Image (cartoon, rainbow, N blue to C red; front, side, top):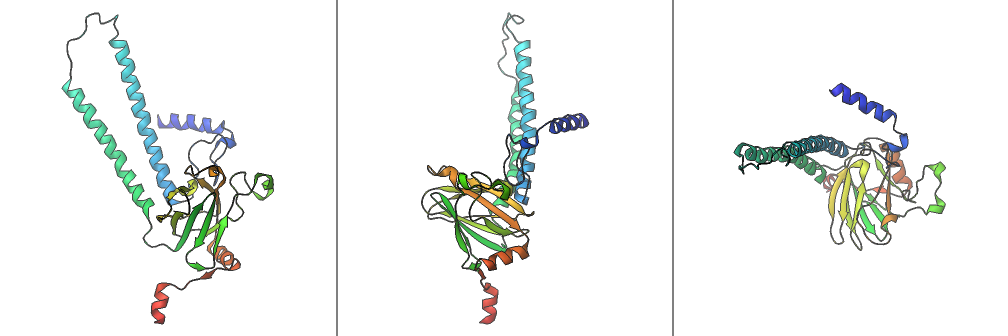
Length: 273
């Protein structure tokens, strides 16, 4: 049975235009499924999503089958004399216990993912993100002098030859090193925003006067896009996020070229004292 399903699925994928498949780092036209995973967080989310898809498919088929069975077997023409029973103890026990078991099966991995998404215990780098109406501000907390604002590139200035995308590309993309645990501190300066990068499995609300914490670890070099996911006003659709993940040596060179000076770590200060 599994081989038959796999064969049918392969034929379906082969007949599906590439534009309908998930793209690397951004959504594609008529996209199917989630974006390819660029982080361990999204991999866990994708696996959980697949598990839930199987569960709801089985439940839907079962409920539909029972409904059709009841419609056919207990239709009025066949049962001119109504039944007199009102309950069935075994059935009621089953439909009480089975949903509880299903919820437990769903809850255990979901709690695991929530814990994974919450925070990283030993971050190698900290990036503070501030949402404005309607653009983003970034501050590399481990560096002196490395902070900037990021605006969407206007539609009439988009250069497709440079790999830029309408409503997604920015004038100052965020550059981060790959294979690095990056702590994200997210806040807002005016109204509610939401910092979201689907391919990295990141989505965190930006609340004025509050720092919300999450993290990401991008495992593959590339360009990854996101957008504000909170309806924050008339410019909501025009504050994208563009992240360039590069090797660590390239990131260090970029930080130095942009005037960033690495701050001494707390351990180094203690040694000097």
